[in-house]
Image: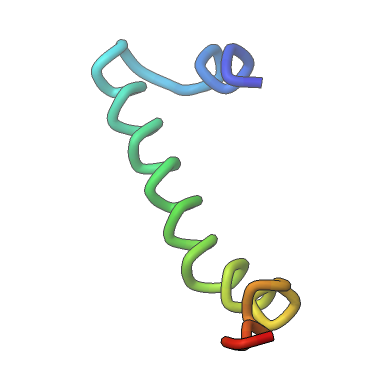
Length: 52
């Protein structure tokens, strides 16, 4: 997958590196903004109690 993405990015190597970093930052931001909050209520570690 990464090789396919690298081959399809335009420009010289330094431009490809910048685009790859921007894409990685966008994916990370999307995860923190939408994915993680959506699955947080379904995680088992949210219902912890002390003394059980």
